Length: 223
Image (cartoon, rainbow, N blue to C red; front, side, top):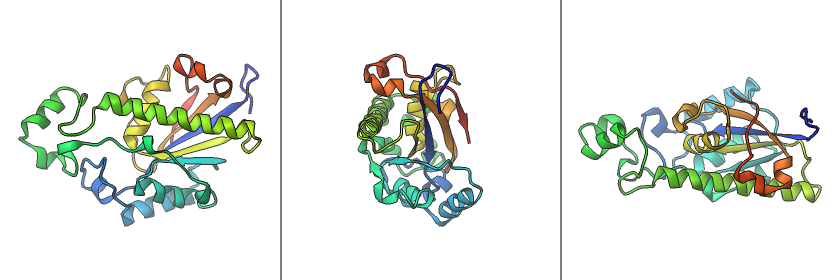
C-alpha cells in the first residue's frame, strides 16, 4: 500500500500476550516468566476464530514464555521464523513483583509509588524511564531487521509486522510514536490479546536517522 505522499506503508500490529494466572489475580507480573493459563489460551483461540488479528509477514516477540506461547497460537505458520528480541521483556516490578494491590495495601513504598503517579523506579526493580528506553531501542532493532530483509528481497516493503509483547512494552512504544494520539504512557493500556494497529511510512526505514525525530504512527487504531 502507498500513502498520499507516494511512499509505501508498513503495517505494525502490537499485541499484548494472552492472560496468565497472575493477570487474572491482578498481580504485578513483570520479570516473572509465567506461562499462559487455560483461560488465556482459550481467549486467544476465540480471537483467532473471530479473525481479529491481521495476517502477518514477519513476527517479533519478547523472550518471555507468555509471549512466545501467544505467538505460536496466533501465528503458527510463522512460529519457526519468530524473531525474539530481549529488550521487549516486561518491566521488573522489584519488591512489588508477584503481588497485587490488596497484598501491598499499607506498604509505605507502594503508597508513595501510587501517589507519585506510577512513575520512577520500583523498589529493588527497574526504573520506568529506563524501561521505556529499552523498549524503544528494541523496537528500532526490529525495524532495522525489517529494513535489512527488505533490502535482501526477503520481505516486501508494505509488509505487516506483528509484535507479540507486554502491556508495558506497548505503552512505551505508543507513548513515543503515536504522535497526536492520547499522549501519556498509561493512556495506552490494553487488555490481554488486544492492542494497536499502526501505519509506518517506510521512508523512515530508508533513513534510520529520522527515527530520532520524525517517526510518527499515523494513523493507528485499537483492536
